[in-house]
Length: 310
Ligand code: NAP
Image 1 (cartoon, rainbow, N blue to C red):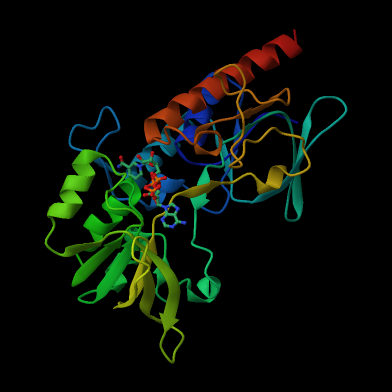
Image 2 (spheres, rainbow, N blue to C red; image 1 turned 45 degrees about the vertical axis):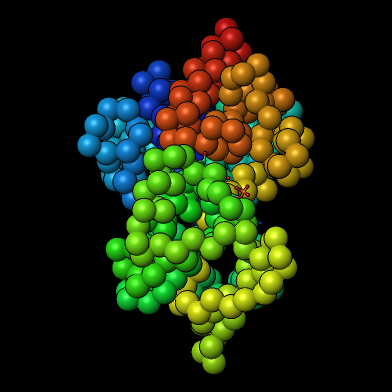
């Protein structure tokens, strides 16, 4: 029986691990499918305190992992498929071919990239459709690409892609970016970036090999349709919280599927089950807020165990 199982290896998960490990709770961290969370696939992080020159996302995550492991955190590379609360108040977590028992669980599973929901999306992943510029950008040298979205992710991805692509169309459904001013100014000042305002993508068009060759577009103001030739589309239209494995637990989720936290902390409506980071936050969604929330979850789990075990 584990004292604490932490699901997720983003900022929230590793911070919860550092705190629970230092409290001698010997945490077990479960990695899931995207080790390192969203920062594991990003480029430079300029706003994490303590790094005046900035730090690469994967490096920051490696450092958090090393810090957690220094105090005895253990890591398992499996995907949790379901979670159940037992009659004695403990939890059973099932993964393919294995299961774990824990007195407390911290869910720090983050959120995954949202897609548009167009028909041939699944077949196009890896053939000119992706959500990760740092993973796939270098494959598209000297060819036109597009980024869809208007937030910080879209601005960051578009700026990064100008290192490789001949041109980066930034397709946004409105006529101004949601991104923070510094990132919006930077991307719009880049001469390789061509903003395509008030426009949605209605179809992905493929060549004879089934690879992306163009997108069909529609102007949201005029209804005018068009086509943009390109070789890759980077979708950056936000995220969906990773909570599907919690189905049937009775955990309270909000309208968008994020876990509802109790009393401004990291507790949930299920005693002993805590949530931290982007899986429970559709407001701030920053590395530093996820880390802070991971700390809250760890402290609350520690208190819960102390009270329960007298
Ligand atoms: P976001 O801020 O939610 O922006 C999503 C963008 O996609 C919005 O511009 C939205 O348009 C657009 N969109 C949503 N659904 C769409 C659809 N179906 N079709 C077309 N467009 C659609 O998401 P994000 O950019 O991933 O950022 C998430 C959080 O991470 C934010 O808090 C952001 O500040 C943070 N972040 C920070 C950094 C950094 O500081 N280095 C980098 C990346 C992300 P509307 O504007 O019209 O709603």
